[in-house]
Amino acid sequence: MDFSISPELADLRDRIEAFVAADILPLEADHANWDAHDNIAEAPLAALRAKARAEGLWCPQLSPANGGLGLGKMGMAVTYEAMNRSIFGPVVFNAAAPDDGNMMVLEALGTEAQKARWLAPIAAGEVRSAFAMTEPHPGGGSDPGMMRTTATREGDDYVIRGHKWFITGAGEAAHFILVARTSDDPRRGLTAFLHHRDDPGWRIVRRIGIMGPEEHGGHCEIVYEGLRIPAENVLLEEGRGLKVTQTRLGPARLTHCMRWLGLAKRCMEIARDYAERREGFGIRLANRESVQVMLGDLAMQIEVGRLLVMKAAWEIDRGGFAQKEVSMAKIHVANLLHKAADTAVQINGARGYSTDTVLEWIYRYARQARLVDGADEVHKMILNRHLSEQGAEFYRWATAP
Image (tube, rainbow, N blue to C red; front, side, top):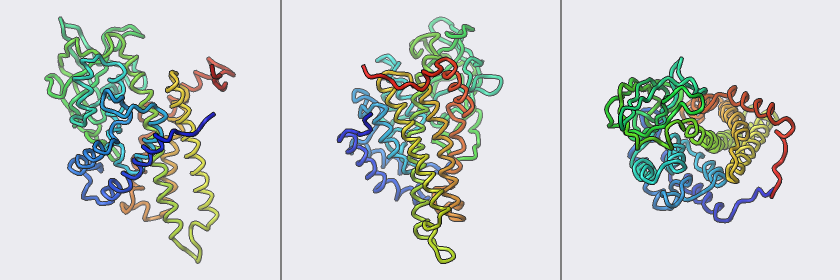
């Protein structure tokens, strides 16, 4: 098993790390560069994005044909972790959710015409996007089979009626991927569509308040009241919405983990720096055994998360689905992020609870990690299903051809 990376990937990682250190972290430290929702404001973001593009650090997840760097999932794991040393890092490099996952699914499943119309503007950083799937009770959430939003064929159009909520980025998105029900077939009952913000027949009810900082565009509740979508805007084909969802969410869960590892390492960095400087009762915090145990355990858990993520990325790169690997990574890294933030706050004391560091930002953000793209419990059920089906094969190493 080879855990080394290529010199080219190492160079890209180093350039991203240098960009984050020199250009993003100083900006992050000044709250004048933040917007009202604890994200980076548009003016400084635009300047940083222009510089990242000029330095060849833009869209690592897309192929060069679609404006990216052509990295596989293993390369993305290395670079995404480096980006998210800063809380604002991924969006600067056009690798933040939800655009990240939306671009990947459009590249994988869109027609050439759809890529030109819907993908290219997102890849260029000209517009933002959203993935409209989740519904309020009794609609679909973790179980898409419960979806109640309908798409009814009328001539060359589909007419959409229904209710969505917690749609990330919808408040500022121009391009939407919408999943709706076109039949009651349990496997072929859902269809994915593409629509634009300016299309009539839908509206944002509200931007839902949350406990943590928000992505640009927030998390919105949406009502569809007769939106007409032409058949040419069906993604993949009618009845293949579940396939689109699986293609979209599997890699997106993994890229969340890649980014969260960067945040967990940032928590460790802040905690270690403070422990080295802070003294109490005649001894530095870093010399206290209790603090050493906390940091040592956290370092181990971060490395466990990195290995789980890289194994899942390797499986996808070699053509597998990596369902159980992604679920294991998602569970572990989501919980790790919360533990890293909590540990760092504890070591920093009142300073960690204040806004003098980004720890409280990360702490608030971390709680959603155990919910987004499938709650912990759902992924544990998935793992148990694989274990029941595979038995001892669940643990078997893949054999090289």
